[in-house]
Image (tube, rainbow, N blue to C red; front, side):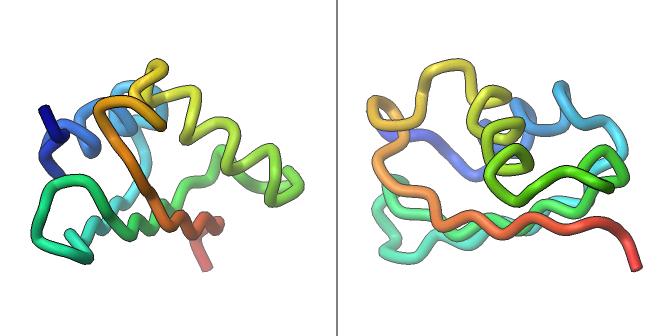
Length: 77
């Protein structure tokens, strides 16, 4: 079973409550998404650590219920 964009957003928001999240279903199949997450939590962190925070928020669903996630992270301007 695939994940919905709403499920992805819920997981991320639980871990990063201040996040502004944009999710696009790239293939229309619920398995391939592009996600942009903007959060103050990322300030001063290397990009790899920022992505790890988002992947950790997905609680192990990445690679299982969620097949592919093109991820962009940044701090607010």
